[in-house]
Length: 191
Image (cartoon, rainbow, N blue to C red; front, side, top):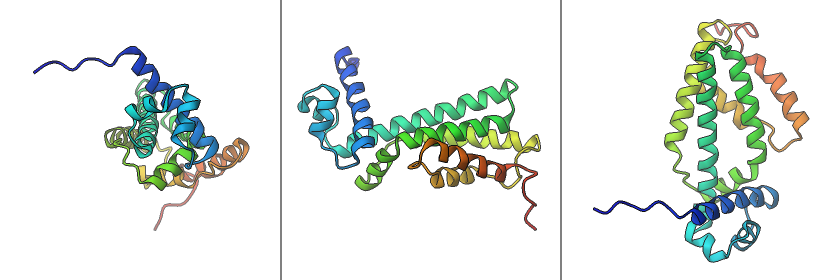
């Protein structure tokens, strides 16, 4: 069986330009932005866009999958820092802040994925993120810093309620208010 050829350098660059333009255009103009506008913003012909992404759903799914891969890599890097001696609670707090900020810039893209019903194909990355988060939470619980009932699902609940459509100052204030709810000393154990 012949070995698959690596994509040409110009094809890789075009794909990257299309993904960057799609992120920016959907975030700026919403999920109804046209494929022609995305192609124009990327500086490629619309045919080039369709060769890479036959449908808008495919394009949005690729943007979301790229975002999930970044979240997974960030969670794994946070866990690596904890393994090297960093504080787990500090890493959880910093991770939450980074994801909330990244979500704010990708808010419209996620709305577009929901609107279009995109299957991102990012299951492996989601599992990577969940495993790294579970390990971070476990480390923080073992240190007595995070309440024993906190789960990965709770972290996702925080993400889903984050005011990503608000200004940065509001998002920062939100984090200041909700993060103490994770800590062991901030609330009594359920009884």
